[in-house]
Image 1 (cartoon, helix red, strand yellow):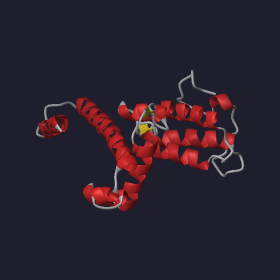
Image 2 (cartoon, rainbow, N blue to C red):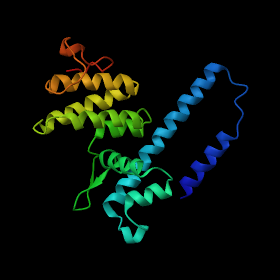
Image 3 (cartoon, rainbow, N blue to C red):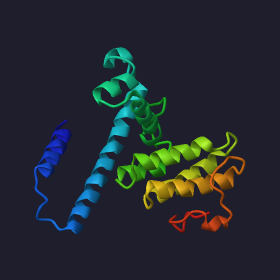
Image 4 (cartoon, rainbow, N blue to C red):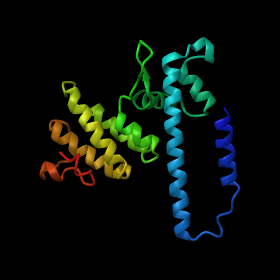
Length: 197
């Protein structure tokens, strides 16, 4: 709670500043850093929400978790459900033994915690996995998540969407995605060379 108090105090200190003396280039840098901090905070929220999903009893928190989050965070019920789903993928988990487990999407979760990836990137990655065939192998899913997580840190969500659509079209050509006719090595613009398939 003390750390949260300090975080809120720092946010108020920044909000109380005037940016009039900054150049336009400096203002862009400030906007970029504020965005990175907001993304890091969302990474912490995923951890908290995932813990609530695993342990909270409705009677103890005032009702079903989606409704409680919607009310307390003043967000739409659908947004609360998305938050819970994202937290399930991006927050650490607990085994039955109590052992702390890595997030389901470890590469993406790491980029969120670093402030490099936001909710729109996460939505693109989620849609990609939603479109995959049920028989798609688990090891291939892990590889694709690593690739998409790395690309998300380098691309805007719209650019990531194009890359994800190309990947999905190569994996499952029976689904209606934008057509990709180029070589597989060129299908993922902006991807780190070590991860490009």
